[in-house]
Image 1 (spheres, rainbow, N blue to C red):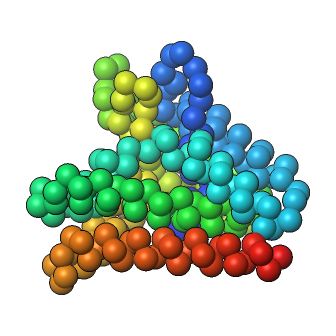
Image 2: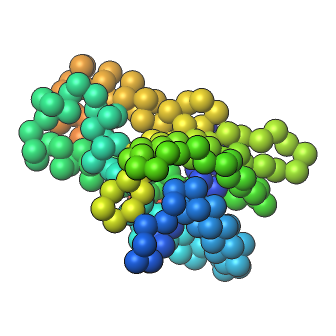
Length: 209
């Protein structure tokens, strides 16, 4: 889990306000550098850092993810059984969960670097995979692949594959198991409770600093 969180901290995207759609590999390369720079420059207290990182993740990182598609893939066959209200709730709680996950991941940054591999994509492709490696001096590199789809407002991530393990597939196994046992509403409640607990714990931790 620690390695997974560390990988996430260096493979997130920050929105780039440009008129033209940025190529997916360029987007990842330039914004990963910006993320690292922001984390390095923030020399405040741990509590302040966490609040700043949480705000940055929520405002700049996650808008570049296609949460509707991610949640649909994670829910698998059960997505078709969900009502519009249940789908909306699932997307919201899934997004909240990743906000907390990425915030925690950023706090684990320790001078790693990211290398973006040459992109193999034909003109007109609407989906692509951007392959990267997270490198730390003296350590083994960690492969991180982005599954991305082109939208009207730019390229969006719909899955992250770390060392061959798909984030969406991992959640699908967990989601399916809970839905089979107690239904979609139970999964929604479980995610909501987990998010509320994580938010409360972060608040108490910040107040104690």
